[in-house]
Amino acid sequence: MAKNDKLKTASVLAFERKLDPSDALFFAGQWSRRDQAGEWPAVTIREKSVRGTISNRLKAKDQDPAKLDARIESPNPQTVDVAALPSEADTLMARFTLRVLSGAGKPSACNDADYQAKLDQAVRGYVATHGFAELASRYAYNLANGRFLWRNRVGAEQVEVQVRLMEQGEPAEIWTFDALSLSLRGFEPTEEAKTSLHALAGCITDGLSGGRHVLLEVVAFARLGAGQEVFPSQELILDRGRGDKSKTLYRVGETAGMHSQKLGNAIRTIDTWYPKDEDENLGPIAVEPYGSVTTQGKAYRQPKQKADFYSLLDSWMLKDQAPTVEQQHFVMAILIRGGVFGDAG
Image (cartoon, rainbow, N blue to C red):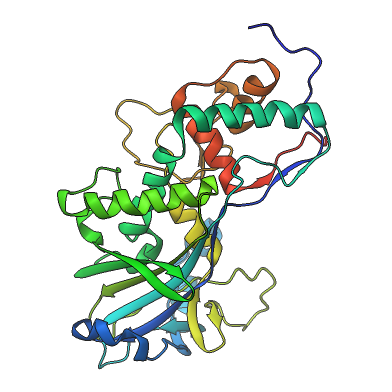
């Protein structure tokens, strides 16, 4: 198809997120009493002061044995926030809601009518050909496997996830999953989970396509052991002074919680279409324009490889070169994620 020489990327181009989680709140109770979870008390955050030891890497000038002995003898007091289950509770409950909004691919702001018309055409073509089934099935899988629990999922003896479709404030449907039976490395459902996953994915598809109002309540139970530490989000505080608390945990009122951004990152960890070596088995990564994985300090979608979101979108919109089906899924997942993508520079 001929290259479109006149069309340019809009300088103002923004999309609102279409998967909108709340913060998650933490509660504690007994695994055997999950049916009474509504009465469980909140997990609270308390301060703990400890004497730390010198464990950081030393510079050459500090490696003198006498200096090191002197530093080790000096106290290194630290005050940190901690959150843990009570001694009489062995299970963490994390609860949040997730709105699934319609209008995927429709910009909330675009200052170029021609560009918006081309974008609408591309999005309608994608939806007509593929629908949202592939993306919705992956979002559903990440709810069912409890990926959003992050470190609280690691080492748990049992993890159960209940996803409730809410209507008029009451659950209209409930799907229950054995989260540990569902891998974090792929999206292959177990036989036991297949029917519920299919129904949940269909519900998310309906929400993204505007077929119905969709509000999900997600309740996860992780059996960790009585008194065990749990892991809310940690606040990023850049201007700590000397002697200030060295770790601050997130709380909503007096209840330990997890940031909605952290939940959203886990839910959109569906990108398996990024370039990688054959012997590389990282598994899915979060949908990000450059495929960034901060824990590895690496971007898996490099502009030089034309694998990043902007290169794919520009080729599709400006050059009439539709990406492969897998990369179309990625582009649409970015639009569902939301963000500001205009060519203002």
